[in-house]
Length: 277
Length: 261
Image (cartoon, rainbow over all chains, first blue to last red; front, side):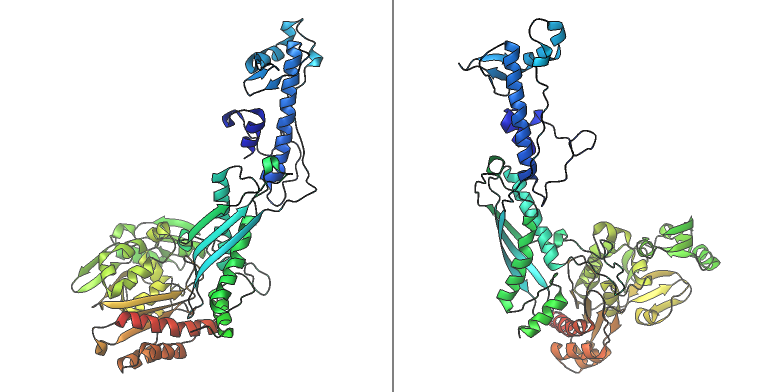
């Protein structure tokens, strides 16, 4: 997503852009995107930095050519007002790099450093939305639940990368289903952690998620977001627990108000609702 | 798990002598349960060279070597064909394929893992255990005894019934069962049924009252009620004793209905 942003601003193919992961030696101090909103918060900073870099390139090219008129960068060349390519990128970089030997073209201090950074702190938190729908099979004799189908529709503003957005949503639903149905941190009375291994703390396996999974996006345009995008981070996990608990209620009248919806709790709730068998 | 010395004896006699050498010495199977228990082992005695990984029918008995992996039990046509395949199904519900390829049947039996469905299925099938020293011991008797300093060589069955059923309640697919019920039903009612509840969470036990009732003509629902009334159930972090009692009745009812339909 961040590569797409840079590519869009600088008209550069994605393979010419490289991301360096957070590293105190090479990247500016950053305290995080918050609420896993990289697409929105980090995205805004990336778009701002790329926009600055583009302005530096265009100003540099103008100085190299000694032109009075502004130039615009199209990814390969600097274009003058008449639409003609006045200077190629490679040529520009060569001239900037070897300015000492090319005396007389321009004064070194006029050329901007091609380096831009930007920071973005949002006074707004444009909320993404997900609507979730669960179809559930309830064993009224044992309290076991089986998720048969889940449908989720998300509004994350502009969908920047449809494939990544889809798997983010699908992954979140599976994670949320685990949270709803099986994942539980257990302690002894004295506070010793019992669920301290994947033997005791079961995340969904492929056998737990044979359910049909349908996702869709209802796009909107977030004016404060990069190209209209909002985040699509933690929101994806939120709907399965509520949708599944409500599906249980809808099917049987049984209400369970703590997660996960384990068979023992479900059977007791079925009893209270007069729905067990 | 910490192992001081690792040996692969070339005969059961040699293995038995090694085992008797020290209380810290252990026969190791797939080393999964011992690893979980973080055991400290003097000499780990590996029986891999003794050809005990067989699954075969011989002399009218189904014979499974102590080193047969759960995976081979799960896939064995012989195990799949007997008693509606409950042993193969129980073996197939332990972890993933990699784990099942490592865990040995002998290890699954001698670790006496209370929550496993394997012991429930074996007990329903009236498994007999052959030890190097003690000879043949019924699984039911073995489970009531203290741990033997002996080598389990083979698990075998006289005649296996054609019908059976294995039922469990679980929080998630790979989790231990909250409760398991295994039944094996002889040809026609007079043959009777063996009804076992496991993962109570205590170790598997026969529901003898329910078995007598079944033979006397009680229906699956009545048998389930009797089984849940005669066995004891415990609480743990996954489910309450009360839950297990109710579900035992329900699963036994369903299992008997399936095995007799």
